[in-house]
Image (cartoon, rainbow, N blue to C red; front, side, top):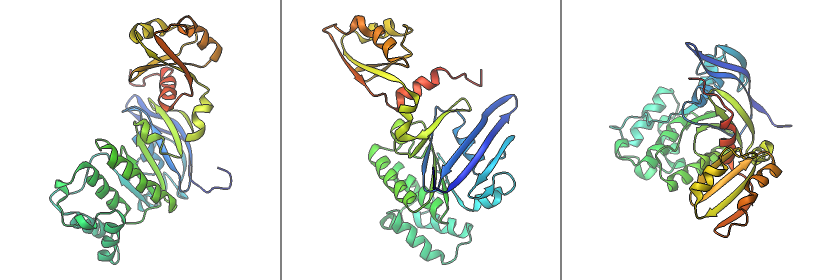
Length: 309
């Protein structure tokens, strides 16, 4: 991040509920205009982390700045500059698209409200549907309306909590095209997700499991930093092969991907030795491959301890 403005810089953020540490000493630096993905299973602490980073939730420990403001002492200033899109559609279904945006504009006490609403409708491709009731929209159009509502006050930071849950692939792709356009304008975007295909859309990825950050890195570097090795095998008897290889020396995880198994480990030589008895089996087709985000995530999760046990 050399010579790039850092807009989020927090250290040791911790959140405790009762006797459970939901987020455990989380550190993060985010450059301006980045799309930063928080990847992890449901209940891993992603949303809680994002809310603390942006001053929406007070941590039990830790400190830092967001958009140049102290996340604890100046949280009100941060909130003014943040747009937050929740996972569940939270606008008014018995109002039209335009009426929803007009209400949001009044809530933010915007000047030139009619012009701002019209600009937002055009920017997000909603103008032709402006008089349609929000409750009659498909998931993809509701998502677009929700994004429009949280962008109206021109935030510097955008928070997206599981933004494409339940949305079809075409709408998901269109949504991400819009998000990258927004980032190109200098808006910093934090995304909470458990979808691998969403994570690869991000410039940076932080893996979170059970309240702890396992790793964070630029998305194009993350796989290489972990150092995992993977073989892909297709053919007959994969269920039996999976049982034989699971727990074998050199094999850290065996995962089913459609019609294939992916066998992974940290030691390339030990992994090859583990699979060597099966490499000449004519009913199997083997290929060494670069691991993907999902293999890396499975590997990282294997060594994580559930903080709610």
